[in-house]
Length: 99
Image 1 (cartoon, rainbow, N blue to C red):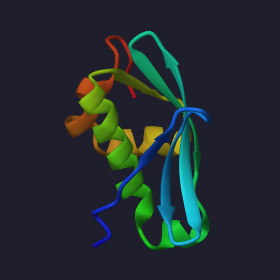
Image 2 (image 1 turned 90 degrees about the horizontal axis):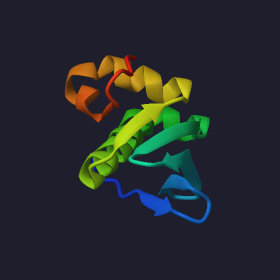
Image 3 (image 1 turned 60 degrees about the horizontal axis):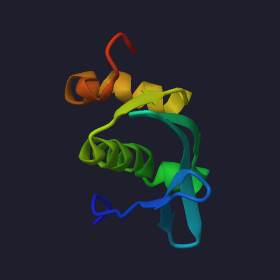
Image 4 (image 1 turned 180 degrees about the horizontal axis):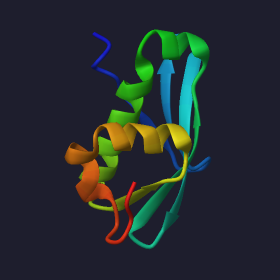
């Protein structure tokens, strides 16, 4: 099922990764104190058309939530997802940050 995806945290390249077949999507990040800045989103059109965009971003948000840190979405795609799901993920934002 499409909802059952497993993301990987590639700490060396500082990016979360999702592999589907021969395609790979990634969200690059930078860590500072107790915050993670999600800086760059990259996904091929084929994966986007199959509906993996929101699923991938949701999986990354859940990973951040499990780590107990705050996130700052600087990528437009990630910020857009957060705006659409503000009620569910507002607690992940640092105090004083509004999207």
